[in-house]
Image (cartoon, rainbow over all chains, first blue to last red; front, side):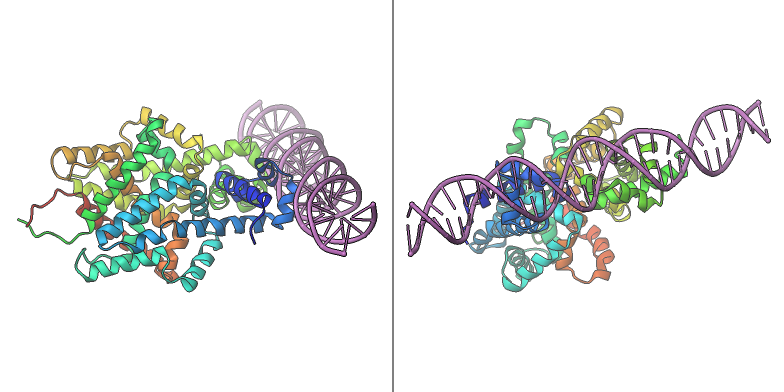
Amino acid sequence: MAPSDTEQQLFDAALTLFARHGKAGARMQAIADEAGLNKAMLHYYFRSKDQLYEAVFGYAMQQFMASFDNALRTASSFGEALRLFIDGYITFCKHHTDAMRLLVNENLRGGSLVGQHLQQLKATAPDAPPQLMLRTIERAVASGEIRPVDADHTLLSIVSGCLFPFIARPTAEVLHPEAAQWDAFVEARKQHLFDLLYHGLRTDTPSA
Amino acid sequence: MAPSDTEQQLFDAALTLFARHGKAGARMQAIADEAGLNKAMLHYYFRSKDQLYEAVFGYAMQQFMASFDNALRTASSFGEALRLFIDGYITFCKHHTDAMRLLVNENLRGGSLVGQHLQQLKATAPDAPPQLMLRTIERAVASGEIRPVDADHTLLSIVSGCLFPFIARPTAEVLHPEAAQWDAFVEARKQHLFDLLYHGLRTDTPSA
DNA sequence: CCGCCCGTCAACCATCTGGTTAAATCAAAC
DNA sequence: GTTTGATTTAACCAGATGGTTGACGGGCGG
């Protein structure tokens, strides 16, 4: 089961190139070159381009789920859970840009892989991070900690805020041209997003 | 200048297929077939696949900008501007899914086209919708109508909330499986998003 | 030392892909 | 009715692409 060194190199190269050029745009030859190996090895370890893509996609999704699974469970309040979720999500995107790009790309294309894997996950691991966060929101609504919002929409809003700077990086960089400051921008986003969402969600403080 | 009927059909088919399969995945033959025309016509009207793609992309971006330009100018308060922006954005995505997908795809891939067009737009039309909304936010901060938030981050958050359900539709549909209810879900999102953002942005009401 | 098998490779193959071309068609101008 | 120019078409082409194959090699059990 332990993937050989060669297999891993091919796999990594595939992830990189699939993320960069999409499934159709990534060439098998280019993947082999990137890994510094012979193209035939790709077919030796993964039979076809389709199967290679599926393997890489599945890995990306699994990696994604694992990334902030533990963090979430330690939260004691909704505010803390929200902060952990945002931090985990943004940190994941920052360090696993390729995996994230692959996942978003597959979503955007409306491929069937997303649905498949998500359904399967829902069945085998009913406490995966999305579900977990969803229930955290519902609980916070029930306890009156936050306004009575729709949990699905809210989760979508949280996720979108984390993901979007990476999705729309070229656009974001027109607003924030200093290239070197990208990291700082991403880091600042954690705080901005938490503030925005926490203010937006918490129960109204009766005023004037 | 008026594009011939043939040219328009090719153009539309190209938009559809580029959006569906990406630049690399869309085949010239398939585009011609979709338009019910001969493949050579594609090269007759647009010299190459690259130029066809650029033309389609430019059109999508222009269409996108035009879609909610007017609406924004009529707003009298920040709240109204926010509502109009959200409505316009979501409505655009709903009715021009292909154009939206193309734009997001290009962003995700980090292509140079996004930067080019946006820079050019910034120069020729300094009051394009994004800039306009940006300044609306800044004004609302200055007037104390909303908290002193970073305008760039805030705009990004607004846009992301509008766009994301369309980007991640397969994922969203796992949460909301009833296929027929997609339209209702999108419509409900306008209200949810406005509430979330408006609560999240408005100046703190001093309380206990 | 021998045979065996896994891993590796260069060369090869059928098909597909973007792009070209020369002939055919058509509409308006003369 | 013929000329002229834009439009349309089928056939074609060179190179790329996913995938295959047969040979080579080296480590390992015997």
